[in-house]
Image 1 (cartoon, rainbow, N blue to C red):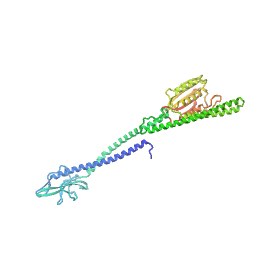
Image 2: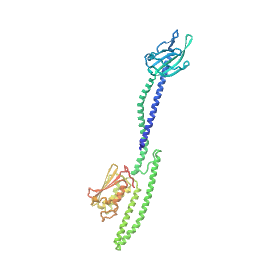
Image 3: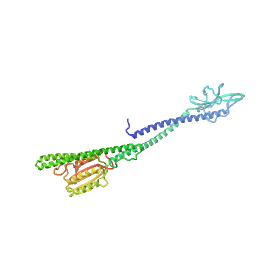
Image 4: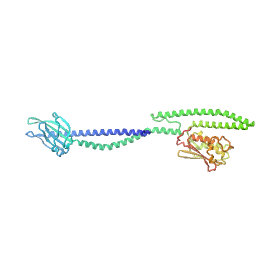
Length: 458
């Protein structure tokens, strides 16, 4: 199965590499320990050879004897695992340790120079595998030279037992070392991937409007990625600006013909052709709605998310509407918390709230109240009025472009529809409910400036 997580891939590779390294190290250490034990055994056997060679004496009749026992008591214990034997080529075995009991070491018939030492591995008492060191020594006795073959052997299982004990002690240490190395690898992976996490947070900050571009203080290995992201943002911004300019030019270019159509409609109405004038006005109004939609869409595509405080902007809009005939007679209450900020372009927020406030002023009898709720990265702005409200069955219809439930009120019917476009572009939500004041409650949910949404203005 393919691992999709880069962190898990790196940790898996570190685990495999550490396991192989520790396994090879363990085998190598056990091998070196065995070599060391064998060298110690050879050194010990060499010491016994020297002792034994110095203790060999000859009786007047030429019989070889050992003047005193060797220092290690195991030579006197039957089948103890430590043995010696003295012999010559002519007479065979002459002397042997008590530990050999009734067994004779079957030494190979090889040629030994005087003082030369050979190392053998052969079967001993009880078919035990022995390590044997053999030396040829020439003695001067009774005017003649006599060559003896002196051998000392030890059970090879002692070396294997020591190696197994060493391996048993080594394995827990290697496991502990592996755990430490894996922890170090995890820390290294965390530190190594931190710049990517910083890029992710930086992109989120750009999306939420906290910053416009990624900084230039990343490590040189990931700096090209950050630069490419910034270049992509520059190219996208330039393309959007060009699209906005084209849409704006097209929309503004159509306004002049629409103005001429409106003038023609008035002229027809003055001449008494009211029906033709009304048809032209309907066509002009439909074209006007399409133009307004195009302008709004074009502006939204180029909007930059910034941390926009809601309360002061709403207060400016309230002060503006108070100067109009619609809002001068109303009681306005701005209860939006001062610390609340939304991740939205200030112009978009101004148009969004402006349309809602204008709609509330148009329908309210005496009072309009603005409030806010900030929770879980979402800012909800609530506008209540004490007007007649909208029946639940008709609330969806007023969000459609150009729909007006009351034809006696002025306007194009685009206010709440444009609000819906803006809210949707920022990944928010627009709700219409019955207000506690008796009229309409408009709720606008937008991403907080502290946490970016998963959608871009489109």
